[in-house]
Length: 508
Image 1 (tube, rainbow, N blue to C red):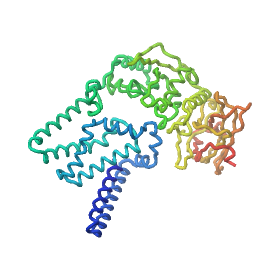
Image 2 (cartoon, rainbow, N blue to C red):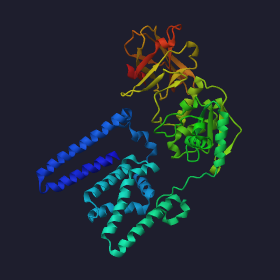
Image 3 (tube, rainbow, N blue to C red):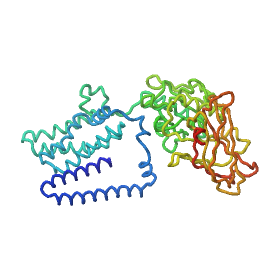
Image 4 (cartoon, rainbow, N blue to C red):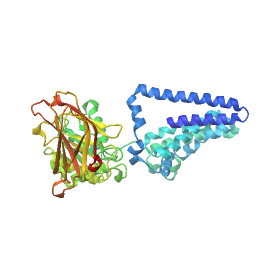
């Protein structure tokens, strides 16, 4: 909307100055400069307001590539045009041309009509050619020009029509708008062949399986009195995490809602491998057949969970199915898997390989590294140069078999790890950086270690040795161990910057 607004204002300024330049070129030039300055000040004020309200939000919208993150939602321009027109109906959408007719007939201010028409046209072009994402709430971008266009059409008819038509036109226009409203609220069969001319159906939501969803929510509440983690492995209008959350609030009130519903990665281009949610989950809700609201090939991150439990592989072996069954509309079946034992590091690494196989392209929101049972202050993120940074503390040697930082990308055939360590407290005796290569079954095949002390300021490089018996390295994990086992871990808090996994030959 911001692009459309400033674009329309800029085009209107250029049009006005071009017309004026025919007779008064100097005045047109002055007007162009003054108008450009006003637009620049308006744009600057807009950015300043965003910076004052939420600087982090402004930084995200300026640095995030939303075309990549939301690629899974995108549709063709033709599909988008049909979606926009269906949102209002052909009659209302075409009636918005009243802006042009009213401006030409001088029933309304021509420049005002031109601005609104330019705004609507640019918003439509941006959405059809660039954004290309459907959604009921996105129609708000086009509602102002449609409403103003219909108002302009009504005013034009009142001002310019003959006496008989002038008395009929308001009633006819009002009847069409009321019919459009009723058609939008009616089920699709109630409109029949006239549907393309009227707004798309948005009938009141109603479930034939209401009681079964309520029974599912009651069962989950009974199973999780202490807010144990629940993963809903479904993402359709039939069942998803939000439906379960809203059903609980409806049945028990906002204050009574207590289900520990975990975030669910759903969209391949935007989200991440579901390992981070599967590891803390105590219960996993599975729906068969697989439930998706986009084409299934764009929601592999959640389909991989359903297939994991269907095959009983990886950490699915740490769960056991409960006897309860729930039947939703269309014959979909819901089952609940309950955790039977904790997931080991080896099983987590094996599961990562399975998820990678099920999601061939790495999800767009997947971070490079993921903590496995490491408590704060372990944290990290991607730096501006594309490398990873993290803060952490040494792992007690007795816990080294069950805690690590997992590399979530696909390592090269001969991997090496590079970065630079900074210690918060120079009194720390030092740490050992241990990098382990893992085969497709989750078994450690090679280990490399490197000591680092507060006096070591140069960057490090660790080459992972070849796997035993020719086993390929398909995953990596990193552990930070203490040089002095008797020194408290919090005395050796450290930060690793520029953390990268590169081909070994590239580090030479």
